[in-house]
Amino acid sequence: MIRIVVADDHPVVRDGLRALFTSLPGTELVGEATDGREAIRAAVVQRPDVLVMDLRMPDVDGIAATAEIRRVAPDVAVLVLTMFDDDESVYAAMRAGARGYLVKGAAQEQISQAIATVAAGGAIFSPGVARRVLDYFTGPPPTAAGVPFPELTARERNVLDLIAAGLPNAAIASRLGLAPKTVGNHISAIFAKLQVATRAEAIVRAREAGLGRTTP
Figure (cartoon, one colour):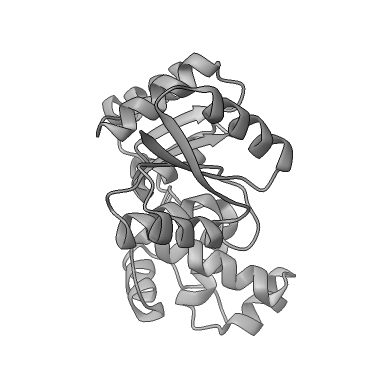
């Protein structure tokens, strides 16, 4: 049996996936999560073969959760199932360690095949995402366009720039008009995407890339 955990903050989506995995032979739904933090906990406690992960969730998002799962439960295969297929989301998920990437609306047969593939150690992408991945690896490096850390969103780059400039979280929140908790969530995502463990490491990486020149 392929043991599965579903992480999605939308009850309707979880209901649909629950019904699907209950009906599929050879699969067993062993847990559900409504945000990234719960997904990490389920990966550690339940040790599923596959964790189906949404990207946009409250508290800890799917990218940061995927990176943490790769660290604390590397045998758990993460299959992203999301509404977003933009380049930022796709590449960030791959860098975080996702083994598959499907867009919501995929047929049941596609989801079933993806579950079996990633559980067996393979990688799978929906057709549109696969074309993006091929273009990414056959095209010029993203840094050729002069954008540092293309895996980060524009807002995350703003936060990282201010971190590298020496601003504390409260000052960053004030500068960007964000809640302190939101700034903390952005920083967690930045650390996961850059694969750094401390603020000092993030500052070094950022300054090497030319960030941190914003006047405090």
